[in-house]
Length: 328
Image: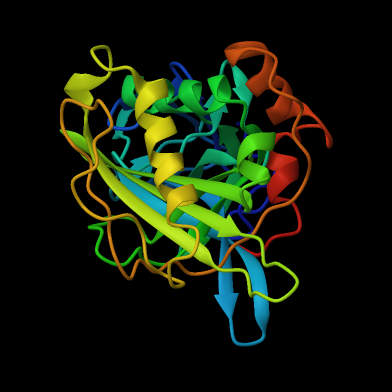
């Protein structure tokens, strides 16, 4: 990413900045490294600070309606006050430790439609701040997340869309101001049972993942549709020692079996369905807002079908284009 616009405070011949990622692919909890390359302009410059920000787009539910907002959800200082001589070339390494709750943006090597994320460099000189374009960042699932995504695909769920919702999930500890929703259309047997869609959320920590499932109920002619929620705790250590298809199928069957339960109530505690560490349900679960649209492709096996679902419909925008038109 090269800053093509120059700081007005310095006029023509100001310094330029080029941020280079060592590898744009990363994982929740993993490092993202690179270097910020500076080239001095035609005169010395007193740099106040250089800061990197992880930037994404989230949906906000407001009194005047829902809207999209850009969030710098993590800011990392690269350097404090320093002097850059005219024509001087300087390379400053950096490391960003991705938060464990960082949302997934890439699955099976394909961009998860609806998700955008990047690193933006902020250069401050003479009280003027220049924010550059975004360098795309691709966040891949952790093994435990991948196994659960695989299980949904194996069970015939079709990817619909994904987004980030501003807010907190009731009863779940979060460190970020938003949570990710990965939405699916159900296979026929669950659609016939009244499940309209399933929203999957991972809230990840170093040792475990809170898996939150929301089953959107379809109202009948004389009944009102409502949501059923389930919350389960799974361990990273169980990623390769568990039949995740059986576990996920158990979670979904719980929702179907409790179809007539009151709105806002999830499955009871103590149902593990073959999981070595039993998951637990949660009553009175609350989430803010539900967004996302578009059709996914039919599931044609784990990798091919789910990836096809991510890419079907609209073409994937470049990260910079995806943010175009949103306010800073």
